[in-house]
Length: 164
Ligand SMILES: Nc1ccn([C@@H]2O[C@H](COP(=O)(O)O)[C@@H](O)[C@H]2O)c(=O)n1
Ligand SMILES: C[C@@]1(CO)OP(=O)(O)OP(=O)(O)OC[C@H]1O
Image (cartoon, rainbow, N blue to C red; front, side, top):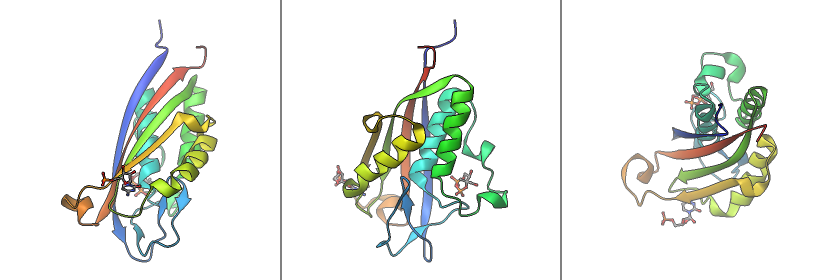
């Protein structure tokens, strides 16, 4: 009998870079002096989310579908990756149950923008906002993230079979 539920985990990290806009969770942080370096808009939170969703479905990872070697993904808004991943899952009979994301960053403060991120992600995944968890923590000054050199994110996702 095919499984009714599947879980997945995703992780990503991007370094800060000057001259780049900062996008996190599909939300722009216009006051941030630094953005994140990457081929796309480098939205580390959404990349971890895509990997959690793809992992849950056994479909590989974000680079499988949106390779950094392809020019069409240059500076591309990562929320479009989330929308496309949701469609891939739907084609295979999966709907998103819930997702939960942890951002590890000394800056910016995520809490004040978390509801906005939840709304953007929920719309892309076609779920209610309470199916999207966004949490943040600093790294207490330790390591790469603690030195404010970049941001990392973890995500987990639960998929439910459409028939369930
Ligand atoms: N980038 C961040 C980091 C943290 N928060 C919020 O602050 C709380 C305390 O963080 P600690 O690392 O000192 O434990 C945390 O629970 C978050 O609510 C944030 O919004 N953005
Ligand atoms: C998102 C993609 C898109 O080309 O590129 P980046 O923005 O560099 O992000 P990363 O998480 O390093 O790699 C995944 C790629 O699929």
